[in-house]
Image 1: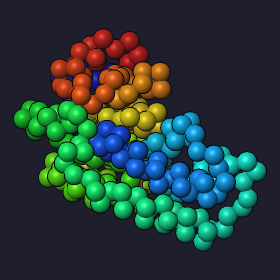
Image 2: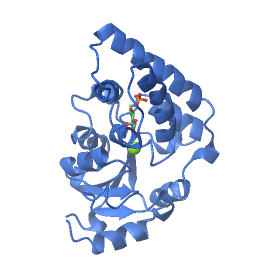
Image 3: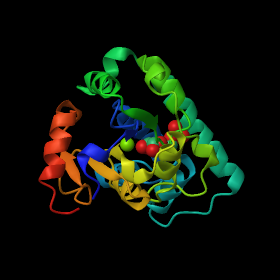
Image 4: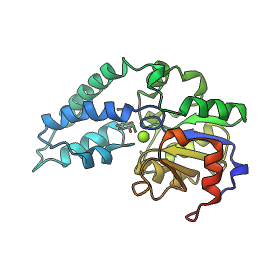
Length: 228
Ligand code: G6P
Ligand code: MG
């Protein structure tokens, strides 16, 4: 694994790392699940983290009991309905909704001349950053509509590193979802998981929450890493 001192770029996931928008996605998706006759469970919710819009819808339909076939037009309508509801929830986001420690961590990264990019699967990510007052930190944002493969494929993290003119191995990626950690690893960057150690067991370093996200804890985590 790359040494901490060789890292020059930090690639951020958005939902569940910078802001608790995972909760808002879940709120909007659960209404769609009800509509297609799928029981909403914590397992289903967890399986959608990091997964793009149409694949999320597909998973929700498939999780139903004897799912019926939906035409492409019907699926588009369901996805649009979800997004309309999600946008209504996003409209209320404010800088105080930034997760603990993130603002200070971004300042720390700037201070130490790390380059920063966003690697979110969400087409709404620029809007969310604007509401949070963080758009100025993220001048480099991967456009998810340019991707051939979603997470857990590493394409999004490879593109994020390329936006910074860095090799993925010179970057760390920060993720709250198992599919996201898999994507960071697939790209060859150092993976920092935020959340449950079991769920994120593939990450090079796992921190319990964003409040622990500092260069010092990452450096310490990498030094003690046995999986790399
Ligand atoms: C992120 C979230 C997913 C969401 C996806 C697409 O990866 O973790 O829950 O489905 O983005 O978001 P969008 O805003 O484009 O529908
Ligand atoms: Mg996430």
